[in-house]
Amino acid sequence: MNPKDRTVDQMIQAARSGKQNIVEGAMASATSKETEIKLTNVALASLAELQEDYRDYLATHNTAVWEKNSREATYVRNLCRRKNPDYENTYKIFVETRPDTVVANILICLIHQTMFLLRRQLPALEKQFLEKGGVREQMTAARLSFRDGGKK
Image 1 (cartoon, one colour):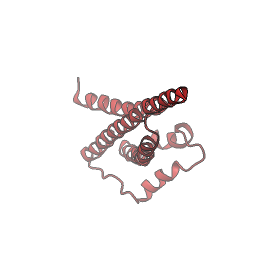
Image 2 (tube, one colour):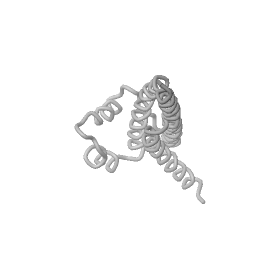
Image 3 (spheres, rainbow, N blue to C red):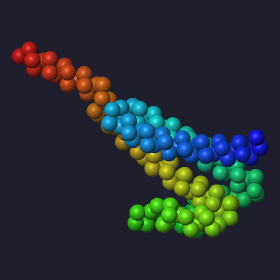
Image 4 (cartoon, helix red, strand yellow):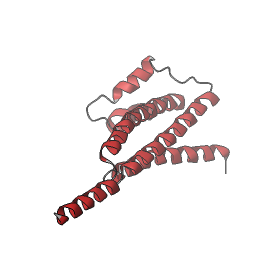
């Protein structure tokens, strides 16, 4: 196997893992805040790995990562503010018509946005866990309350 193909396969796996762990974490939310928190952290780690792969790609092509407040990065950040942004109507024109190094920078920006949002979500999940506990704790409390009510 070509080393380049291996890197592409690893990047695909990191991207897929990031997305899947977000989905799995959201699905686990109903039964386990602890699992949701863990999977959100795994998603962050996968996305950080993917972002670093894109940075490596740019370095090997002697291209700089866009500065956070550059005109290009700001433009990409503002794309998500459009009404109902999606790939087809928001990003496709840029991703499919620009050079690879520009696309890598666009993806670094989008990954950064995703990671920013996940990092903002984690404290809220942790707060919910501390205030309400996990499902097991809630079920135990309900069972004990039922027992106490049944004895009266």
